[in-house]
Structures are given as C-alpha cells and as structure tokens.
Amino acid sequence: MLNKNLTLGEFIIKNQASFKYSSGELSSLINSIRLAAKIVNHEVNKAGLVDIIGETGGENIQFERQQKLDVYANEKFIKTLINRNIVCGIASEEEDSFISINSIDKNNQNKYVVLIDPLDGSSNIDVNVSVGTIFSIYRRKSKIGSEVELDDFLQYGKDQVAAGYIIYGTSTMLVYSTGNGVNGFTLNPAIGTFYHSHSDLTIPENGNIYSINEGNYLQFPQFVKKYIKYCQEEKNDRPYTSRYIGSLVSDFHRNMIKGGIFLYPETFKNKKGKLRLLYECNPIAFICEQAGGSATNGYKNILDIKPTSLHERIPFYCGSKKMIKDLQNFL
Ligand code: AHM
Ligand code: MG
Image 1 (cartoon, helix red, strand yellow):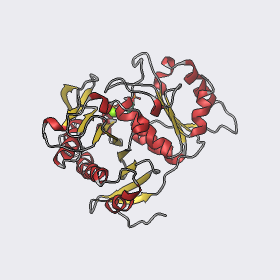
Image 2 (image 1 turned 135 degrees about the vertical axis):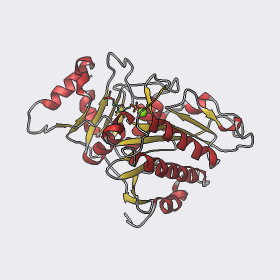
Image 3 (image 1 turned 90 degrees about the vertical axis):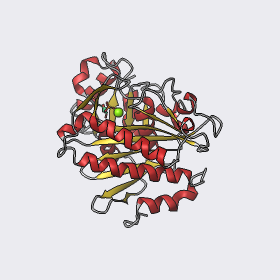
Image 4 (image 1 turned 60 degrees about the vertical axis):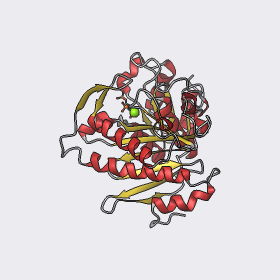
C-alpha cells in the first residue's frame, strides 16, 4: 500500500532485503543516482533562464550534435558515481567507450556496472518539453577487482538487476525497478525530497494511444504501415488516438500510465532503428515488462537480444501487451 509520506531514501532501505543480492551496494547506487538526478533537475529547470542552452559544437559517437545540458548531465552522473565509489564501470550514450573504475582506483572491489543515457530527448530542451535520464544496472561478469571488460556491458537485457528513468516534466519523477515491480517517486522541489507517489505501477493490458513519428511514414516497414492504418480505421472497438512527444521517457511514461504503444521502426535514414539497445531500449523494456507490458524489435523480445556493441541501435516497439500482439499480427 502507498504511504504518501515515504521518501525514496526510506523506500530503498525498507526494500533492500527483498533484493536477491542484498548487500547494500545496489541501494547506495540508487541513492547516488537519486542525488545526481536532483542536481541535473535543478539545472534542467532553469534552462530557460541561464545561458546554458545551445550546442557545444562537438559531436558524440553517433554523430549527433550535443547540447550543453547533455554534457552537464553526463558529467554529473559520472562524477557522482565515481566519487561515491559505488560502481566498477560506467558506459554512457555520450561517451565513445566505457569507463573502467579500476584504472582510476586499483583497490576498487565494486560489483556493478551502470549504463546511462544522461539526458534523453535533449533536442526538446530549448522548447521547454520534458526530457529524461535513463539508467540500467548489471552485475559485472569479469573478476571483481580487475578492470571491467566490454562483455560486462554487453549483457542480455533480462540480466539487468535494476533499471529506471527520471522524467524532468511538469513534476520530476524517478521511476525504477529492481525486478520486483515498478515504483515511482515524485520530487518536492521545495525541500529536494522524492516521495513515493506511485506504488506497483502497471501498464493497462490494452490501450488506445499509439506513439510514433508519423513524419517517417513512407519509410516504415509494411507491417508498421498496416498497423497504423488499423489504428486509424474508424471502428467503435478501436478508438485510437495518436500522441507523440519525441522524448522517449515522456512518451513511454504516459503510455505506461494510460495504456498505449510506442513505436520507433527502422527508416531509410536509420536503417537499424534510431534508439540504442543498451541505453534506451533495454532499461525501458525492463520497466515495461515489470509493469506487465511487452517490448520487442518486431521479432524478438528486447530483453532476449544479445548486444554486440556499446552503441548498437534497434527497432523498438513497447507498451500494452495486447497492442504489441496486434502489431505482431501484421508481421
Ligand atoms: P537522443 O538520445 O539523441 O535524445 O534521441 C532519442 C530520442 C528519443 O527520446 C525519442 O523517442 C526519439 O529520439 C525521437 O526521435 P525523432 O525525433 O526521430 O522522432
Ligand atoms: Mg538518448
């Protein structure tokens, strides 16, 4: 049951024992993400006020323009995780390669690696649209105390020990799961505290929202085109509506609460899809499945796909179970 006075810090302590590798390390990790989230939130909220918006002029590994707040969020999350001596490796959408903490601190004995998209949807910042942070946590596979290896990051999504996101929206929320359901926490900005606001979040089995960038319609695979037409047909049992923010965390969060499907197929421009398996699709798919929904690349469950490189992209469809099934019927 929801105790509305419970803070995220208290929730983490209370639920530590239910986590199968309960040693306190994962709790500290989530606590450090909570801290970085507050710092980034403070900066994102005043983005319209200070001269921080704009491009750095640099390009990240995917050759996209970086916004200054991307860089800021990337730095804050990485610094917080390193300073708190909580992880053994970090991979970020904004970094070309992963960071091995043992190359900084030879005595590091930590077990977890974190993969992070520090500020997703950042092209939306300068028009005051919600953006988000997405994170994914795994236990390392290589020997504790040694340098982390690429394989520590290229794990199946189903092996995530925790995943979540922060949505910097009309209110700021942190939503996460350690594999025992999904819980949401809303920030009271006046006192800087996240309160437990959404207990055991579940996505409706069926929904009426479809979210896709229809500007790319002509480039979509046939089954997606057919599905969109199916959603647009006027039938009483199919009262669909289209909602697309262009900010994955916000689009997914709305669909999880209301029931819906999010689609990002391959296009001529992005032949393998646009979204990244490790930083975006896996953590969102983990939350989606924990909430009772499903996530696929069309053919295979996202969480069952073996990653082959850090910045790999894939087509991504996720949301209410029945809607994913309907989509797959057109394959
Ligand atoms: P980003 O990681 O460069 O911010 O891009 C990811 C974002 C997602 O948040 C969103 O779902 C998608 O890109 C929108 O792409 P498009 O503008 O092509 O519809
Ligand atoms: Mg992103």
